[in-house]
Amino acid sequence: MTVTDAELRVDPALEAQVRKEHAGATWFELASATAKAHRDYDEVRRQHDDEVTARARGRLHVLELLLAAETDRLHPLNAR
Image 1 (cartoon, one colour):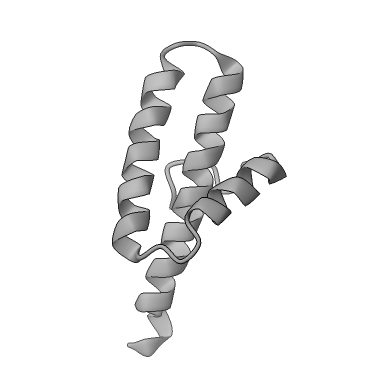
Image 2 (image 1 turned 90 degrees about the vertical axis):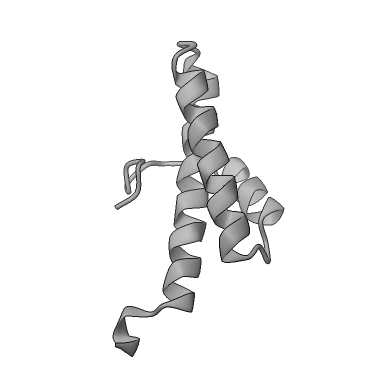
């Protein structure tokens, strides 16, 4: 399960931007970007700015989805 809610609604423009920024990224690059997004989210969450927090949470969510998809691609569960 991801850190963020699986049903989180992310602004489509933000999602497209994050997906474009990380198109073709390796698993390690996605893992690094996800870790940074998590730290960024934790930092802005404490600032009590709802708009900035929502963007950071959305960015984290999209990166977690990309990382999960790349993990599944590299290590499919049905290959065992």
